[in-house]
Amino acid sequence: MLLITIFFSSFVITVVDERLPDPKTFPPLPDLILENIEEIPWAFAVTEKLIVLEILTLIIVIVLHRHRIIIIRRLFSIVAALYFLRSCTMLFTSLPVATRVTDCQPKRLESFTARLNKAMFIFIGQGMSSFGVKTCGDYLYSGHTCTLILAAHFINEYTPRSYHLLHFLSWITAFTGMFFILAGHQHYSIDILIAWVLSSRLFIYYHTLANNRIFLQRDIRRMRFWFPFFSYFEENVKIAIPNEYCFPKCFSDARATINNWAETIRYLIYWFVLFFFISVTYCLSSSKTMNLSWLIQR
Image 1 (cartoon, rainbow, N blue to C red):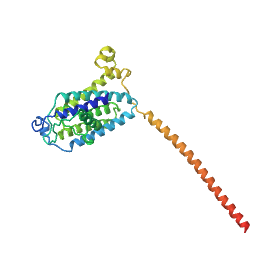
Image 2 (cartoon, rainbow, N blue to C red):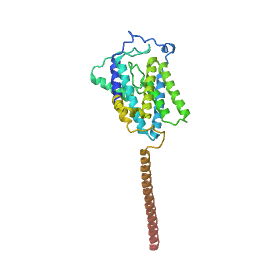
Image 3 (tube, rainbow, N blue to C red):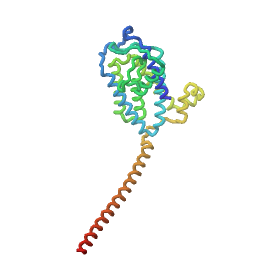
């Protein structure tokens, strides 16, 4: 479901790029923050590096968490909802480019196949300019901000409360990334605000419902009607999941496999050394016998 939603969002971006208002005719909209921040060309690249850092941290947390499957399910559900909403807002309203210095121009693709190819390129590059993806019309709202905020929320939720430094750094990274999005004039301020509100509210509402079973027990039919995916995914989760950590089973299986291979290699080396020693001993004894027989003949 998540992959389908992200690809749909990528396809919508290709359509939105074609409907981009011409920057020569439509200047950037008035924005209180952008008007008072000088554009920094390298700022957006910094944001994407911070996103990679946040995602790597979140991946480590999820991999080591005992209830990693539940966390992944919740993460994918929220991200899918955000990307679907973003696809709708981008498609319904096309905003002018947020910066005056731009090479963005509305360009209509020739065929549906060309749109699919561009959508696949955006999908593979995850919309990040660091991977060579360039988009112009994907405003309202910021996908980069959603990623930063969600990663910070999940890191804070699924790590012990005593990890104050990790929680602090995750939020500092998120807010710094949001600032650099604005400093690079890649989004309007309203894009950042809407992305922040939507991603944080969806996370909080989802986990409030998931951690309080009374909401599901009061009227299960109504919950299944209004929140079908939530009801399906959280049906067997009875309590708030504790923050417990362990290595995945595949790690222990891999370790056992490596140990078996090491034991086999050790066994082969032992027999090889033994065979080599016997061979050398036999050769030396044969050589001495030949020398002795030669001396007797003399």
